[in-house]
Length: 316
Image: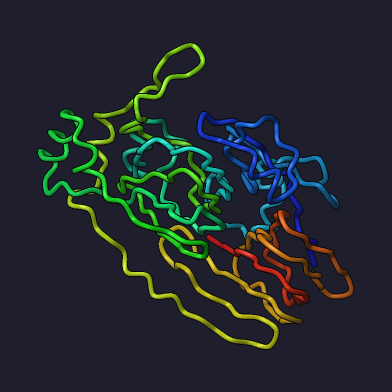
């Protein structure tokens, strides 16, 4: 029986970042413009490190290569998922991600497209995000972008804590000021910027836009996805299925006691967003607290979670 892999996150400074990752989770962030916590990542641009057990000190990518049995010999060249927490202290750029085919062709064989989803951990009272667009054809999309008709083009949605959004590749989107989000995504770092509010960096330079790529990959017209949240009540927990799709399934566990589970996937990713709990696997127990992230390997079997906590769980 394998033990869980507890992971040390990587932090990324961003022009739109802030200090909420420290205030909310107690993370040791590098600066007051820290935008991203790469919590569970084997991507070359930011590798999580195992903090316990046999693989302590190894990166997740190394464990993926050295111990494929822990991941049920999952058939993929790279660890397929990436879990982040994003602190949108200011508006993020308006962007869109390619699918796998476009990414392989234009960004290199080893880079993947990016379908993602967001769980809104917290947000300001009047928060919103950009999700989709109003263009009816690719020609109209191109014209509205070239004329800078952003108010007419971009579709804004009001949000509140606990909301969930599924963001397939090809969806124009942006988190806006005052939003804290847990993101589950394909393991990819390919982003095409459409609009960046004409912001400049410390040297007075505007960030690069990728307009032709964005026009190529955007889904036109925008399609909304029907999400049917399935809620299961069981002893000690409420389990909400947030999404089940091609690249990942994501669940919300709300614990209010002791709840029994079975790890029946290739592997599962856990992020503790609030509260405290104890993870029991056989005779071994592990204390869980807010801000911790871990993987349950394929041969974990039955386990128990006991406590009061909110946990986001995903699997490929």
